[in-house]
Image (cartoon, rainbow, N blue to C red; front, side, top):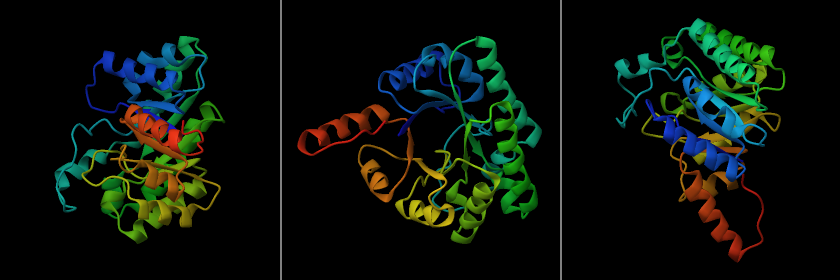
Length: 250
């Protein structure tokens, strides 16, 4: 149930391919990268159970927002990626896979336009979620789409609203965070999201999930974990299996 992740801006090809190789070797559910990096990992993942996962709407996220308070309009503008660009990113991903001729499945992690949302352009955000899910599934109906609410910027009411929209639009998963804010996934958010989406939509915890807290998220009932620390988590999980009856994490 792990999505192994390399979403750093400008991550070198060698690093991205290493993550993909690790994801395949350890049977992770997906390897998550930026759209322009998808061609680097297609061949590595071809024929495996590990899917290519593209993070849509991340182009301007180049470093982490580290302030404790929810301020900083300059940063929040980085979420203001036009709908047309997100559609183009989705098409770019599917085109890359189709042109490669390789046997690999695609997942989409879709970051909402938080900038529009906090400026009370909510109708645009709701419509965008539906349009982009439809875009991905029109390319391949079985495509798994995860909607990222970016919880750091949202209060409880806003989280409920966004994840309700995602559920109603046909999202397969909702995801807590992009990983580019100082406060990542929270167990209490997982519980809140489950209350909103029920059992028909999966939950992906991402943002700061590591070997020291991942088990809390598993206990809270997440369906996926997104992390750049997959190898460390798997090592810890293997150690737990030595002392208790185990299961499968990837």
